[in-house]
Length: 267
Image (cartoon, rainbow, N blue to C red; front, side):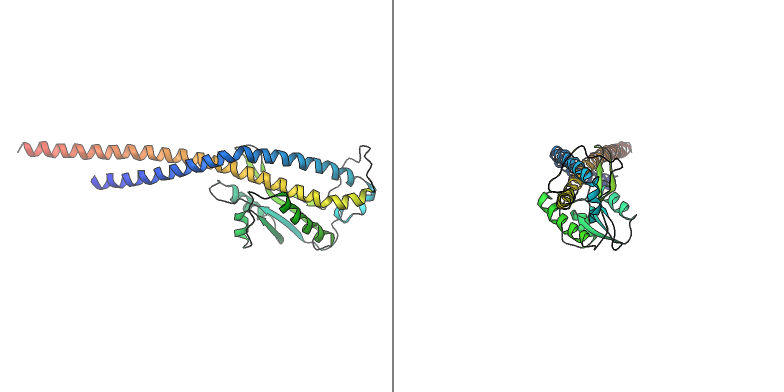
């Protein structure tokens, strides 16, 4: 019994250390949730404003001449893959890479430490990814698309639905799709719609990238918070079970010692 109680004490100590770790990581995630959600909501508003402008321009017959509305050229696809900077976020990173398996023969542009490690390239962190970073990437991608080096651009990111639910999805950016409803709302563009569209497309793609990064980061933080809460509950339940087992083993050892003492005194 003595060996069992010693082993149980060691296991309880080990699980208790894990419990402290999960609580600490849960608190860190909780401290980041509000800021991440605020940034995500602002980027969603900006993304919607860009969509309204680009959709209005895309309705113009003149803009039909723009290469950004056509996918002629070589049949190559580029995919920006946004994953997390850290692990211990439940299935967040695994879900992104599982979704990626649906796409073959695509050029990958990773954002997030886990994605960069997977594709063996210089690390680009999702946390702290700035608009200037997004615009620099956007300019290169737009120039390459304009030059016909590829004909389709998408972003594989995680869609934040709620604290409990985040789902990976692919958002196709280029070529720009023309809206089903043909209307321009009476907007007049100067000097001309085509020139403005070709100028604004860098801003449009950059806005899409930064919105996807911020939504993915908010999803990562939420997923980590839920994962740490779940791990903490499991660890506490394990400690309770081990403590009960330890108390029973200890009580059994005490009872056996008393029995041996009583039996010895009766001889």
